[in-house]
Image 1 (cartoon, rainbow, N blue to C red):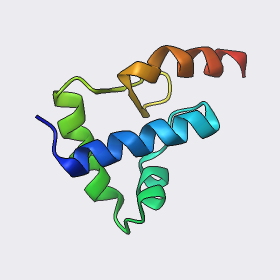
Image 2: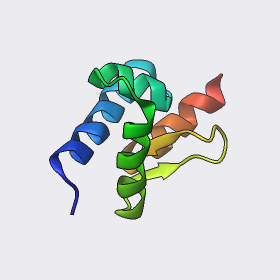
Image 3: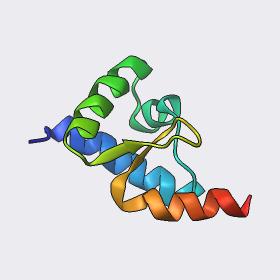
Image 4: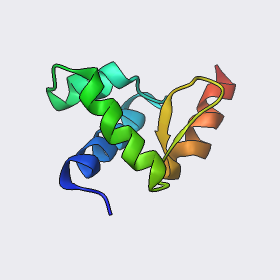
Length: 79
């Protein structure tokens, strides 16, 4: 089960994907959430990966919500 903060990280990722159509960096997620440490985001991302809600993309080494994986891949191919 994911915690409230884990869900907040996932929600931030979705918002950033919607805005930019590319996977956000860990630093972008931290800034979006008002966090000073990207390390805090990494800890939440590890939980989200373990729960199967987020995947690391091999192409960019970025993390992306599973529901956005195909959309982001298509956008990256257009560039």
